[in-house]
Length: 303
Image 1 (cartoon, one colour):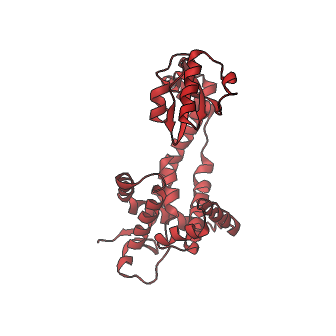
Image 2 (tube, rainbow, N blue to C red):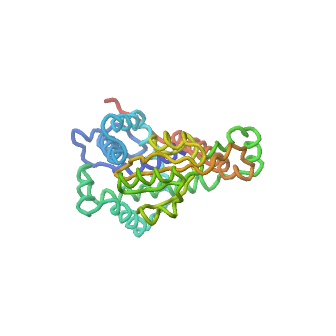
Image 3 (cartoon, rainbow, N blue to C red):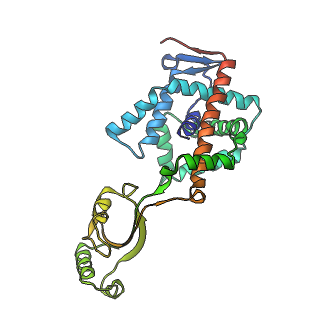
């Protein structure tokens, strides 16, 4: 599925044919009657950096961008072929869909001027983004028509996969927890102390301001490290010291431990179906693209 998502994401970065090539717009590849330029490659890297910068920074960001750089040209060639196929099939995208996507992206920014500044950093204006979104939707449509719509998962495939991989469907030990959240450190320490003495939480609610929630967790799955370190040392009914996270204080109480167990076929079938579908989708997409490449004129130009 990662491969599918990657191709669909890359499609949005293609800027189209360039009529007049400057120094940075030298041709790097020809795909049928269209070209990919150095600017296309540069624009892709800039866009990827902008996307990844929401979660990464510094060395981690550059490593992620550089990992994308390695097979960039090959993927842009595949994107170009998909777009050409979509146009050959006369697939069109309603302008309202593009406008809705633009509005969705704008919601990520506090002000429209912030949105425009982010585009400007990448050397783009809104019209460029609209064009990229249109191309992305065209690619999704042609992949849906030629690959995705033809994939079927039979019930016996799910059963066979389950029987051959039962050990993969063991639900790990689970901890059932109560979490109490306070804003004040002194109150959090006092509340934790009285809970350990055996006071009832409902009685303490008259003296302290806090919120309560319940959740379950398995070791090594999604919990922040500072929380996991605390909750997996607790015994049943034991209460933790306050843990400060992002300016708030969290107290954890272990209510129960549910042992690991084998999931039944019925419990595992949705996950198996999703896995098998993604696998067939990946294989089908690769096969379809390879067939298109064989039918296409592709020339990678020397630097």
